[in-house]
Image (cartoon, rainbow, N blue to C red; front, side, top):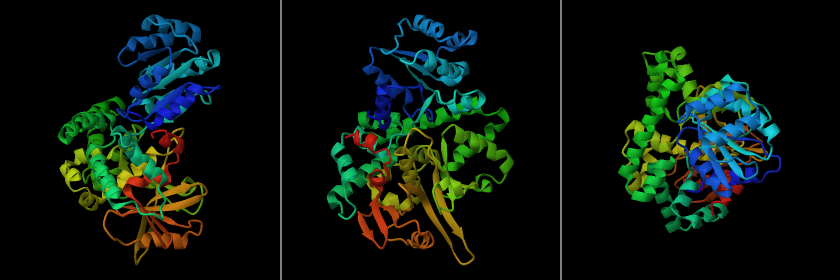
Length: 445
């Protein structure tokens, strides 16, 4: 299955002044697969997995002399590693912290060597070692976006139409309805590659849900790898409860009346570091960058993948297949989380993206904007409306009080339209306006 990250990996291969590349992201989002696929453009790929072969890390304990390390890895793999011809893939590198440090010396002594490292819980290792700053390139991976899903089911013409469609012209209704049907399937299947692969091979949503249950169990099994034993009950509670709190500002009392913030907050940070959840920080939205006015103690959460969150909640997935438009209305929080997941997927993968939202509390009324985005030099407020009609008071209020925001965006099941400084896009069209990674998205066609 073709991924957005494939474009960036190919660009990295061609780069003259190339640094070792570290792929970051949650477990099971497809990091190993995309690297193995990239290996096809080399004469050979040498894959070292530190989790499967824990003794290999002993090679890095003696010293970090690049030529000695390369020779030893060649002997273990049974393949000669030749700079300029071979791809060296160090998988699950978080289990060998000294190997992360060694990337610097491989870059300095063997600049022609193509080296990629990846790891499911890599962010925890990076916190505990001296990272070779300026000697490593990072790329961040996410679950498959809706555009990647359309590519996987061979709907390239629809991708091209979404990317090129003008907002002033409604999509032909039969095409609009077909895209909402495909989006309904995506909402049930989700973006985890194993689930998408299952759907392509079986067209059986029940089988896909079984895959999702297995993936959720994989994340649960990881808890003890990065949390202390006394924290296990807290982190498990958050994992089970966070999907029910999507779209709401976080209040720790909403997760449990028994446990307090001082017990839950560190465990929420662990889930965040494991990339299982993403924070949507509050920002006043008065200027660029949005992070300059962010409140780190005021935030909402979205889960790694919309389908996984629904599996954890035990929601009925069949209705997405039968009545997708009705489900968008019934499951507004899931729909809002979907847009957040899309915004992350289409962001520049060379840096870790951050989502923002806005709210105003007043005695007479409150107002909230689901997402604030920076598009070129403008701040664009984004509202996700799952219901037909629906008030846009918050969107208009934001535009009235923020002069630098010239228009707002609404995502809904409605067709394309423009009216009174509000640009309305269908839910399937996030990539059409907020696809910062345009070259990679276009590469899917």
